[in-house]
Image 1 (tube, rainbow, N blue to C red):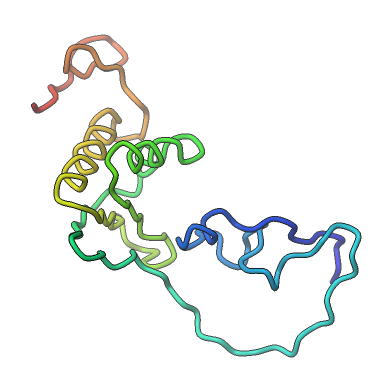
Image 2 (cartoon, rainbow, N blue to C red; image 1 turned 90 degrees about the vertical axis):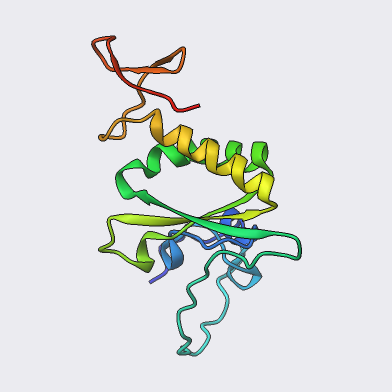
Length: 165
């Protein structure tokens, strides 16, 4: 059924060589074959093909790089991603490491998600530190808690834990 909607922009995740978490339900194109200019007629329907679903994983390390894997509880992924992915982009930029979060559809019943960090040893250590810090600044419900002088405070203002150095 043609509902008048069509894809005019490439998916950012797909364009960056990362898996799109929305898959076939994504509102953006996953290749030039899905792009259509506004006002143009839809392409002729291609015969259906059966292709295996490809689950993309983290990119393999390049020469001189290594990979490390962290397990992060699903309920804390929001703290790692940040609003609109801002926090994870900041971690990637500030550390210089590639950070890949396992898509939910890979292991739907799993309570933890694998986070693969790839880069030089120093980049990986910095990314690990920034990820750990992001998760420590979040309580079990995923709500960000205030920090002051390395002491995490709850809503009452009293210390609920200390930050490791």
